[in-house]
Image (tube, rainbow, N blue to C red):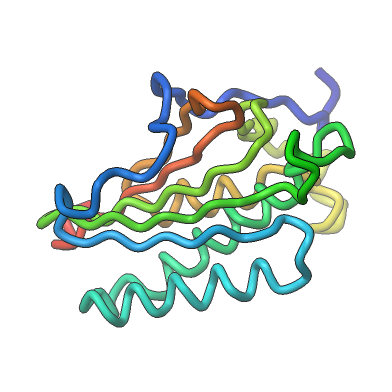
Length: 179
């Protein structure tokens, strides 16, 4: 590999994600929103819902981290929502679903899109002295930084293919602060 060449590793995968949301009665708390990947306010709405969930559920300590993770995951979903440049079978725009589920100890965030390709984390080379003269922008990868942020802020991150096509990316936050 050449210095600075992008290598990618798959994010850990689970089996299949549920085709739809779990029954709210089986959870302590549940909230979800369906967004159009083509709407200019998709990211703004997703961040606002993340902030509201954190506030409404008494998780103010996690609000910034949850909001940033949702923003990054929704941004990735929007970016990859039309892998073929087309629309859904129903003729409408591609959708992004964001769901929040809380149990007594954990907050789970799920961002689902219609692209079946797994999310990839970049793997960089160690910096060597001969790269020290490069600007910071020259050293940063062009993709994968959002998933790196999510993995840094959340207690766990994984993905699963959806039975109906596409994928879900999940992140989990410990509500009791035990990382």
